[in-house]
Image (tube, rainbow, N blue to C red; front, side, top):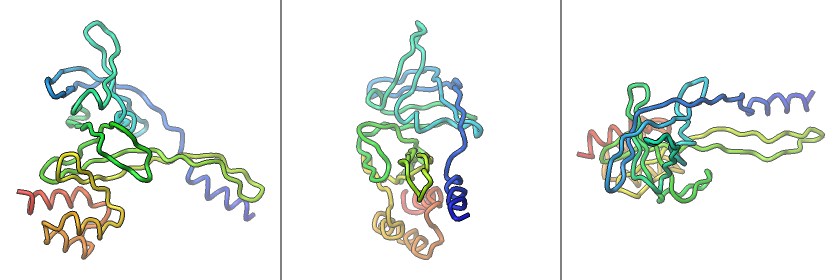
Length: 205
């Protein structure tokens, strides 16, 4: 019974099969010299029908005038924009991001959630486990999807709070009213949108 309980608990962390499809979206490739209008092939996850941002962090794909498939990586563009569900999605290229718990190296596209004096980005990643032995039971590897919210006040500078109150108190020290709200837990981890909007409305002008 004890071993069965362990298996039941661990099965909760095994994600269901995720289907994927591709849809087209009007967009732009923005480089240092030019802006090019294209139609992107956007990978979409089901059942939520949202773009697969983890894949898009690595590359975008479109067909040129001759019908040839072209890949655009973060090395080739400063920014990618595309329209999805009446929203303009912006992905910004950078090679300045350093992550501890999520594997990332070199250039990547980061999804820009909020623009302004203080910007908010999201980095998407998948964590994968190794096979484990629990007593006589062998637990197969499993994966889980995650996100990291990233703050930036200057180009090429990215802050990922580890100790949320301490790190945000230091980074947002130029906005005492906001720091007070964070210390009083009016704003906590998970309230990143509200934190950025408050900063830009109150202290970022």
